[in-house]
Image (cartoon, rainbow, N blue to C red; front, side, top):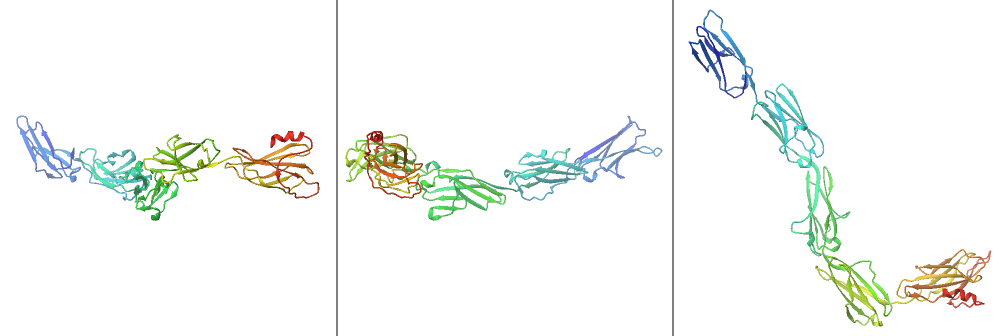
Length: 505
């Protein structure tokens, strides 16, 4: 007979057709059970006896209860017995594994033991309301159930509750629980944000900026650092860079502070770096670097002077003016803007007073630029002839020509050397350089005479030529020759040479 502990148990036994009517009673371990009730039906010869145990106890397990009937001393009593097989709730459940910190990403084994249940308890594992039975194994020995849970915690599991629940599979409301609060160690999880009262799109030059390093870490981060691009940011109040706890404060932010920022945090589990956050600083226009600032222009020649600026927001308005050597300032009205940050002025000098400086002004929503972009307008023309030319280091097959440059005419100039064979009366070599008028003519014939013609050129034309003669050395003879310089007017015997070379000068 099966019953449940702490429940009322009733058992009745009819005794049909016995003459005379028997005496029927219930006994438990040789002791009569007091709570009995009997009724009889003499006509049918039936006696019915009922026994009630109000509250089953754990010690009643497997107790034998006997029903005995007898009606005469002439016959032996008739006895029928039953055993009480009681469904028992678990008496205890315990997570036996010590509750120590665990690391995120590392496999953990947790053991839970339940005792006292009949039939043996079923153990289940729960984390944050989620059943973990697929990660557990179970062993049963008598009334002891042992369960092992194998799982890999994540950073999200920190401070969550892990529950081991044991319950009798037959009895409802029999569950007992033991629980852990998980202490999961993990490397910092970091991100960068602006403080709540700042919007990145509205930060203007001259304001203060607060960047916060948001950190989730267990154990807490012990070291917090900042980087601007790949460069470490030190605490430097003199430069307006303040590091306070997990906040970077940039005082009087400037255009140079624009860029990408990251924070780094570390603890016992490792070091982590945040994603980049772009700091945008709105500023008034400034002149762009590496643009042409000097224009060489001949009189009545039109020049397109380009002015480029950097600004945020990039929508800018331009204004031009001109200032000459006698301090006259004139507004320039002939200009256009191609794009948001560039303007081109159309300028034509007509007299000497039209040479001077063009000023380019720009403004945006932040304000007007502090210093205008200045473009110098200078008169230009062909360069002057090279000067002080000499031939040195003459060998059997080489000649070195060295000159000083003349005025470049306001434009980049190129230096040229033409080498003519005086014997063959023809051009045999043409050299040029933009560095300086220094030339090496090689692969010449020994014991030969040459005419060297040098000049300079730029975008406006070429200078007058300078000519001199030179001789390679005679065999087995070392000489160094220097010659006087004169404008080149070749006058060789016969007219054929002059006709052949005239086009080169």
